[in-house]
Image (cartoon, rainbow, N blue to C red; front, side, top):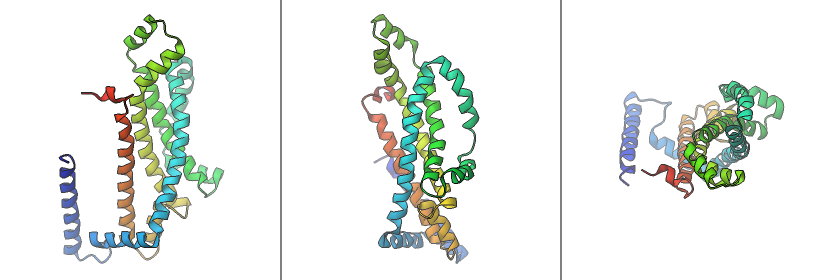
Length: 249
């Protein structure tokens, strides 16, 4: 509770400042916090809000799951096998800096304007952070762990399963948190351009349909709250017994 109170106080001050500025400037376009809450309630009552949230979460879930299934095994292999790292790492380092937004025309060309395009964009944006973190985790394993296992004569499979993977899990979780955050950003951008559902579409459609900035701000706040919730859910993985030792103080 002590950790939550300061954040709530700061949030309350920001809301008060926001309300004061709108009132003092007599803005007829920018909404007050109460108008934004009313807009959220409006969307919730007619079911539009839940449809948009569900569409965005579905796309993020599919793209992120594909990225996890691809990145973690590949990252473990690249980190463990020097030849694989030397061969594939330069390619990934070339692709990694390319903005996910730059892939939007390619995604539309390949997959059209359905769900496949944002799922591809989410995959391409979240897969590289997980690969990099997984490889770094394998390379950072303390040699004494490996030497101790070798002294006991464990097999290569057992060494990988009981030493390498548990040691790398904290780095994998960091990569997943970064990848999920990027994925949530990208799906909103993709929905603004190429789709007719989701929170990104809600924002751009509200702007175009009569300057409904109350709905625009409502969509932005909802995106932020869902992003916070997703990151909190990922952080729960840090409490798992297999990785909790790494975070001990």
